[in-house]
Length: 391
Ligand SMILES: NC(=O)CC[C@H](N)C(=O)O
Image (cartoon, rainbow, N blue to C red; front, side, top):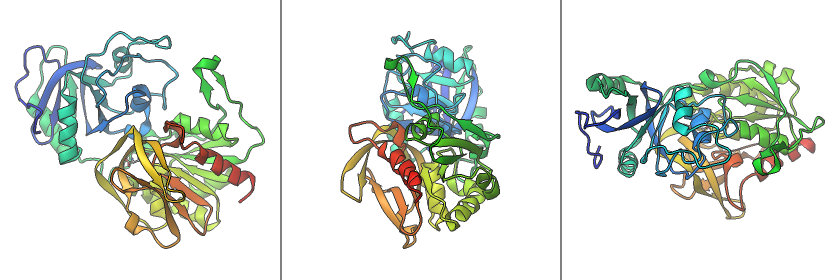
């Protein structure tokens, strides 16, 4: 890749590398687990939240380049996780991981990665790599870490070259829970002694279909007043309905929405047919888009970060959102009964939709993680209050 000073020979002291499908190899210092992992190399521009990013199941199959240089500086803890384990395959950072400087840290970031079998690579010119991804699109690559500095570079490049890529890949099934369960935890705050927002046992019942969900989405639904049951990605219409939901939530998740849609779209269509209220986030938004007859496609570079401006069509206001997606619903593909509600200010891509004839809406971004005074938490309240009113 241009500007990334590729070389097939490890420089002195190199213990890690990123081998790309085009044959370029970037050398650096490995940390975390040793070994190699193949996936799509993307970048994330968030300045913090690296532990949440690494554990977001939507990142399955991906290696994340953090554009912020100091990753690991607040360490790791057992609370800031979106899933049980890290789902991203590895991370690429500019600076070496330092000792944590935060009262909540229980581990160093590199130790936490090692304990969880995930690979890190430091000392990379992440600005050059990010620029290359922006120009050429997200490449497939292998992140590798070997403390003895020995790498079979040709084999790594071959592995990157032969990996089929995220397009056409259904990963939701791999990260989804296989059992149904009830979720009762609301939002918590470290400043308030981790007191959690109590669940409302009489709230409207939301069945959340787990395509790779982030826990904070569930906490936000509870905080908005919902009772929650989570069901696996492959749940059938009858299995969803057996829980007698007032509304259905379609979660975020990894992989290509068109591939997951093969089994998810028929279920969503049946839910729409009986006018069951639906709210979708990210992969859930893309699946709703597919269910109404729209198309999804892979984006050139995707949106991953915590300051992505999105404009609302209703009132023209701009929300600063958190995003993580590499596929998008094509606006032109939407049928007449679907209204776009939000657009990305970066590239004009669709960021939200609403059906005009059914109680269903969805957003491409992550309202539970969106920062700023005009944050998008109102969407959770909007959904749950709609269920309370029985519409
Ligand atoms: N965060 C998500 O749900 C990601 C959705 C989908 N896997 C994409 O990359 O576009």
